[in-house]
Length: 283
Ligand code: SF4
Figure (cartoon, rainbow, N blue to C red):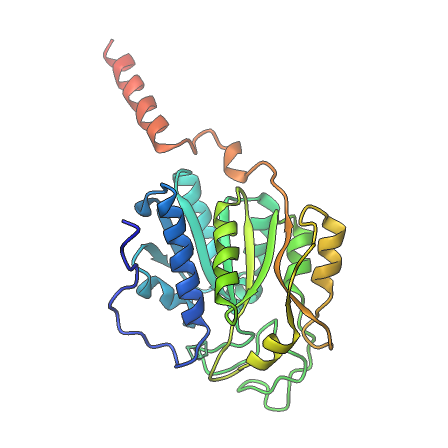
């Protein structure tokens, strides 16, 4: 199964140079890693939102659910509650996760649902031709802000730390091997795993140089130290002349949401319960 390419033959319509390609290959390889460890491919489910990123559901040859804008996490939560045996992950855009779906992002972290959220954070609405998003920098000039935005972007990493996320990481589409590693760690983390990916939008917001020159890999960082994670995550607020850390900022396990629901038993147990009930009824 792991020898499968996992890329569909659907015509790819991402722009040349788009960072979505890197994320696709990093995710594909991370999934192959899980399958090589014995996770059945059919037990891995991808949920996408709406936007350029969402075409991942068309291009990756795995079980997937193309949801609606900002609603990847409620759909993923339902899937996970219905069958906790599944490995459930979401690909969402910055518009999905930080605008329309912001409340769902906060509550997934608060509840600690066992889902991995990969945010394709290109800091622009690419599919609709370049409007500003919650992470566009102050002064960004796009279709909806020809004179520049007047809003400061917010920092999703500190928001996730404050909301209780047990796994907080940042990668970039410019560093494929590290991104694959981060996604693999997120998928193996038991609980809500948040990975913000600074993705290149080659057409409307190409920040390759910024991420290449300011980016650094977190090294010697204690991922179990919340205060240290907060300090590192606060270093870069998009507009300041600061280094941009890539890696795992924080990791700590705590009870997951679905454990509190007896109905959300593994499917095998449900089947066994059903058989027991049938036997009891016939006695
Ligand atoms: Fe990628 Fe931007 Fe093109 Fe969308 S508009 S496919 S994000 S380069």
